[in-house]
Every structure is written in C-alpha cells, then in structure tokens.
Image (cartoon, rainbow, N blue to C red; front, side, top):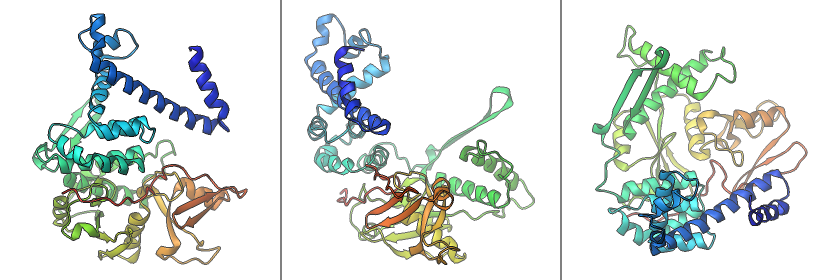
Length: 407
C-alpha cells in the first residue's frame, strides 16, 4: 500500500473511538474516494485524453492499466458521463451531501424517455433521497421511474409473466418465475399463509435453527401447496391469505401520484392505483387508509377475530421490528407488550403493542434489555442502562418525507 494511502487510513482509524466507528469512518472514506474517482473519470473521459495513449475508449484505456473488468470499466465510464449531465446531483456529490451509491441510483432512472422529467424534478429527487437509506432510495426511485417512463415496458402487464420448473443437478428441481405485482402478491400471500399454518401445526419444530430459514419454509410451502391442490377438493381454498395495501389519504383526493408516498403492498413494496383495484377484485384484500401523519383513518373489517386486524394495524404502523436499526420485516416479528402481560398486567391494545423480531424480543424478555418509545421513534437500552446510539437510517422506521405529486 502506498505511503499516502497508509497515512490517510491511519488518520481515519486514529480518530475513531473503536472498531465499530473505524468501520463507519472507512466506509465514509471509501465513498469520498469514489466521489473523487468519478469526478476525475468524467473530466478525463470528456477530454478524450485516453486517445493520446492510442486507446479507442476510456473503458479500453482503464482496463489495460488497472485491475478492473471490462464490465466495471464500462459501468464507471457510463456513470461518470451521465453524472456530468446531472448538475444538481453532481454538485451534491462534490459537496459531500450525497453518496456515490445514491448518485448511481439517480443516474439509473435517467433514459431518453425520462430525461426531461428528471431534469424538471432533479433538485426535488436529490433532496428526498438524502434522508433515505440506499435501499429505501432505490425503492422510491424505482417507483418514480415507473410513473415517469410511461412509454417503457409495463411492469404491471400480466402477459409478460413467465415461470420455469426444471430438474437440475442430481435430480433437484429449480423454480424460477417473473410475475406482475398482482400475481406475485397473490402467490406470496398464499405461501406465507401456508407457512403460518404449518408453523402452527408444529411442522417446523423438527428443524434445527440453521435449517429453519425463510427459504426452507417457503420451499416446504411450495410443496405443501402442490399437495393441497392435488387433494380431494382442489377448488376449496385451504388457507386464507392476507393481502394488505396501505393507501395514503392523498391518493384518494385526485392529486397526482407521489413517488415518495405511494400505495404500498405490505411485504412487497409500492404498487400503482390500477394494481390496488385489481387486488381489490380478489376479495381477500384489506385496504388501510392513512392520514398525512401516517395514522390509520380506517381499518378494513375482515371476517376474523380482533387479533388479525390488530396485526394488520401493527404491520402498517411499525413496518417491522421497532428496535433502532433493525430491518427485519413484520413477518419475522411478534407483538411485544410494552407493559408486560404477566409482570405488569399489560393489555393487548395497540398503544401497548409493538413489533419485535425474535432476536430483540429475546433480549428484552430474557437478557434484561429495555425498549422504550420516543416521540420520534424508539430507544434500546442495554441491561447496564446505557442507550444504544440512534443509527443514521433507522431500519424499518425511515422518516416519512412529504413529496409533491408527479403530475
């Protein structure tokens, strides 16, 4: 390693307070290096200085002088060229306000059909993604592209669906499918309902913790679904899937769609208004309308006991485990009583309930940790009383940003 790089790394590590802070500092340093690299690649490529060395392109020049693949050199050059056309995004990266990872996502939604709309809304999009994690920014920008790229391939088109079931190595079978949002939602909900039924029947209790994975349970549910469909009454539904769509109140006012607050299919992500209507025709959908603060306005009544409706409301409100920084979804959680059921005589009411994954539920009930609500989220307290630092992006509890309609 060159001495200048070593000195820079030692300066970063020396200023950190421990291994965890060192890792965060090194990741931030790597992003700064990436930003400097992209800036210089853009200028170097635009000047065509690579031609002075006899190369026919920047990508050719780079891969013959560094340890990068052809694909990596092409992607770097393409991204640097696109970024030079995105003035607001480029300025935010240079100022250190926007990570290179998010800049790549923004560049990824620009094509010949969306370029004009992107130029109009670039400042707004850059401002919005700054407060989101990279994963949440990708979800929002993918939805924005669907709204803006009206002439592109329609992801909602069921005629594009395809599936493949084939026998592979040693006689094992592989299943691959590409489904539209509605078809995928139905399949996912049925499989999750079968998994839940199998769990209640103790079918997974024989599995070791390392084998009891979500992938294993889903595979078992696929086989179980086939067995049930080939039974005496294949037309009789064996399970009742829960399909829940969260619809912001603004979506019912006639305003244009908001890419940062769209209708959301729990467990899948944003869906269009047309997909909400298609799902409603299935008759197994609960639509929950939220106000501007994310509070439930109306919980659709299902022909079930109160607990399923409470679980739906918890799923909408908490999204997943409420422990700061945890990203485990609602399907992996239990309803935790803030005032414990036995110890504190706590009630099973929504204000006293919160979603907690099995890991954090165990810490709270068996290891002496505490989970307490705050006005803007939650805090996790160690047994000794120290509070876990709030992460930059709080797992399932990303801030609700207010965006304007795309219209």
